[in-house]
Length: 129
Image (cartoon, rainbow, N blue to C red; front, side, top):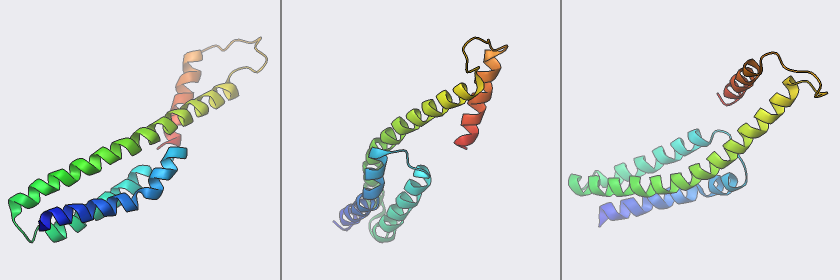
């Protein structure tokens, strides 16, 4: 019972701490998404371990696995939303960079389109690093 209570309490903390993040990620790309989730998850796991490790180790481990499973399920939903926004952002940035580097009048040709695309790709990679 006490380990179950620790699991419930920790998951409720996770749910409440990710509520704003969840709303934000539904609407837009969230800067620092991974780091924010890491802090929340670490806090929830620490809360669980502080309580559950005082009791039966085997039951505590079983409930820990359940907690991780519940958290991972929620993180997948959040990550999917973040990923959609990330893809949109990458494509917008790619289109902008390509417009900047290709001739504007449509009459000229680019000597090495592969190099232009590679440079744009590198700029996008640096943007998200």
